Length: 134
Ligand SMILES: [Zn+2]
Figure (cartoon, rainbow, N blue to C red):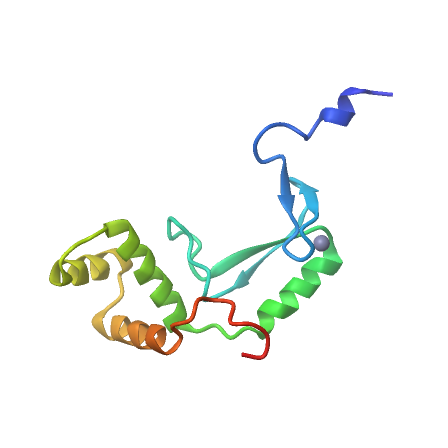
């Protein structure tokens, strides 16, 4: 028997991930993963905006998660609103005019999209996760 096996994979840092469905710890590389479209997914660097990586302990939980995300409508305005929020956070305090110009610059959104995103935000002002049936 190889005693090294017991500690292998339990190194510092990202040795394990959490199942998005049940929260079980899954060793890195063992998780079942799937990219899904999600207009509420806005990362820190913009490389995977609109996409979410689902991680699960197995195919059953992955399938369950995938079904939930498939039911969720993809709303472009929601994605744009998230990108604007991220830009505003990164830019910090600015006067309105400068903020407006820098946000357009950072997000690449045109004025029409910006207006639609702000309108969407206003009508969905609650934090995400409004609860079942909402
Ligand atoms: Zn699970």
